[in-house]
Image 1 (tube, rainbow, N blue to C red):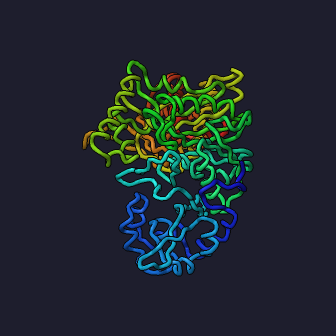
Image 2 (tube, helix red, strand yellow):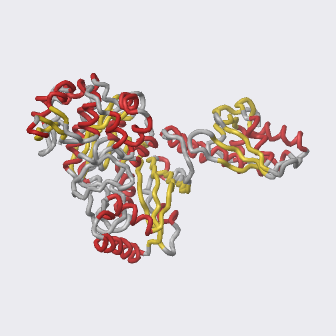
Image 3 (tube, rainbow, N blue to C red):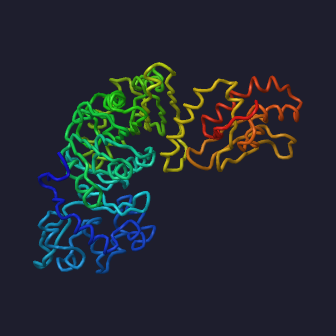
Length: 517
């Protein structure tokens, strides 16, 4: 199934280039919207709050017309639409539909949501989804149609931001939805494949690619990795239907397997689909179960032959979690008894599984021939990091695995023979009582990437402060010993552990050079 076919009930992409030209000519872009609406109304629109944007689009310019049509889903007079885009082509291809207006006036309305989306290098892209399915707002999506396809939300942009963006021959998006991950992958992957259980999602991905002017992808219908047979890839990404729910009411969010089995299955099967050195990156939910450490649960998911970095970003107790997704589907606006019944169903499911909370986060796998052969032990880092980070993090993720390779290849003697450089934008904080001669402790803090902070002793702080890539670690420790009167032999014995931590967390960068140790 390729981008040349059409999904029944959706627009055709045959003349999407003409529509794209019209949208760009009207400045119907992310930058154009910001200029027209202003920052407050633009931010409100991202939360699915439309009143400020309605107030800002009372004129009759082509841009205002397109905003009202495609973003606010308001009918407009046909003559206004004709001034903004090729009206008859848009009607014939299914992007617009005729609708009777007041007093029999000829009006048209959008058949789909078309939302400008700015690419990482200023590209003007468009995400096509079902009407009313922009993600956000206090009331959630409020859609209960089984095959509904969402637009851009926080989860999809998070995954796009953490994905490693090195040039690759092949990339696979599992559960593509409206196609945002394929758009990004098209910038650095030669061969694109996207799968989805929902054929309407594949249709929307086709429209998103065509309207964004991106080269075609192979679109395959089916669950998880079933449609790709034995193919392997250099990059796999997935923002799967990770919600842990009783049943599978909504294809776009509910996994349809018991508990967190869908996420577990996706992760475990990904290893065999990766080429050596390839990355698989997912968003996922996982259960926190009575009598089990959540880290152990996730460690059991990591497939053979892979390194892994798993970051838990948030934890919700089961009542918070149930309420979040009941609001998402609009159940909170139903009959109170029906809402209470659904709420009970969620809690019954969690109780039966011994689930006390649900974690949300990122999972990255990297296939390694050395790990597969047993030449080195796998690096599996599982951590909780709920703090603010700076997106995009793709380079940070890649560097994490490179640092793991570096540390595995060096014993303490080799580490002390190497030289290091303090990473950019690291600051030192000294904490102690006012007027005290010495600080109680010293903290190194990153202002970029993961924005980590780590507590160090005076030796590690001094060591990090003079690392500029010119002297080996051993020679720096010898100099510190002379200044402080500490035994250099003892310093060389106890400091490598601190150096390893600073390298692992990205405070120090190996320079690749080695001096006399």
